[in-house]
Amino acid sequence: DGGITQSPKYLFRKEGQNVTLSCEQNLNHDAMYWYRQDPGQGLRLIYYSQIVNDFQKGDIAEGYSVSREKKESFPLTVTSAQKNPTAFYLCASSIEGINTEAFFGQGTRLTVV
Amino acid sequence: GNSVTQMEGPVTLSEEAFLTINCTYTATGYPSLFWYVQYPGEGLQLLLKATKADDKGSNKGFEATYRKETTSFHLEKGSVQVSDSAVYFCALSDKKKNSGAGSYQLTFGKGTKLSVIP
Image 1 (cartoon, each protein chain N blue to C red):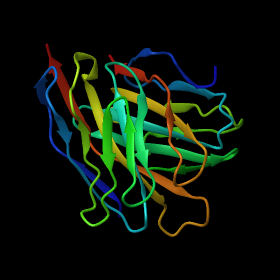
Image 2 (cartoon, helix red, strand yellow):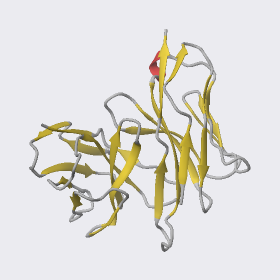
Image 3 (cartoon, one colour):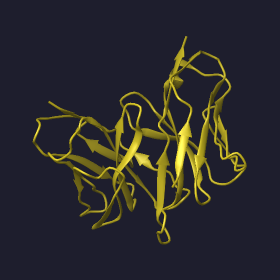
């Protein structure tokens, strides 16, 4: 079945460590996105990529990094520079176009301990 | 810039009650409008969408009509069930500012939590 897979579902990290969240899609979508979700804040865009080997900063990119070496993969690294990394992270993909929906993964809950 | 404003939650209803969740938007172009639903601990799923003025999106008993004159896309359901308990997000898709062709941005509201009690 086609879809987006995020792993792991739960992740614990010590302060000062970098951690990478995985996102893979087999929908053949060009565009991929990373969002952060905090209670009462809705979804905030971290990074997005419209094509392989290219990505753009979203509204809250500081402390995060991404790569897009393959069409189906868009990993997110949460670096030690991110001041408040505990959150629910959602990856999405879409066909680029105004009418098209975004498909979301199941999310990764990151907790800094 | 673009923005989406939803009614504040949480909303608590009894089973079989009528549901309305208000959503208004601001956009520079002619956006497409969406409602997404998020069940506890999961990602978002598309519930319905409308791509032009006066379009009505519908799915699973939920409906929303694209009202350009009031820049609104309110979500309604005639009779809610316990299984409808979730967080609902209104969203719009519009062309990114100062971008070339084929470059679109999805903007979300903050979400409205719905709890339906038996």
